[in-house]
Length: 192
Image 1 (cartoon, helix red, strand yellow):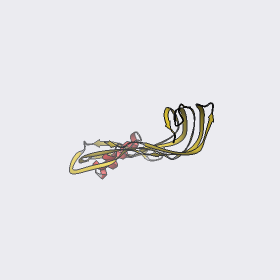
Image 2 (cartoon, helix red, strand yellow):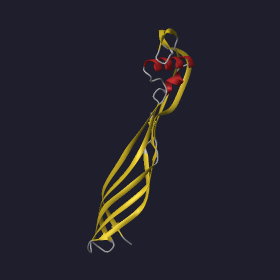
Image 3 (spheres, one colour):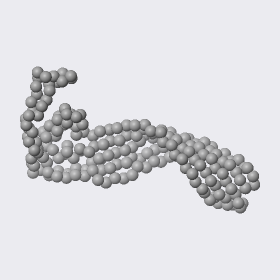
Image 4 (cartoon, helix red, strand yellow):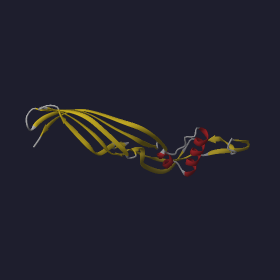
């Protein structure tokens, strides 16, 4: 396994206000709107091995129908996978998490203390909000699709689809989440 990191970039424009309270103190606020862009996280998998083949006998019973109208399936005899002698390697995206670009909103309050003409301290509290739609693609069995022969792969998909609906295919999940960011800070300012 190897991975990179998830990164979010936000660019905003807006208005800033500053209200002098006295010779040394001022109160500030802002109202911003912008775009938030997320660079996806990739976790890559790597596997190698010998190709396996499975011998089996499968029976389709036309007298017992499933609700979909298809005949029922049963595996009568399934042998342990045999090594075919063929080598394989596989590198794939095991897990990918990303998000669509979204609109972001920001505001904040600050209190500035100017103790000399060019030097001041600022205490601030900022709040940023965005609603993102995240997508996760999860593919843990990719190497099994590569490591099995065509017939064995078909059998595994058939058995898994019939038994628990999981199969060997990649899964994709989507969700929307509100992101709330609070920032408290203290800054030293030098004015030229």
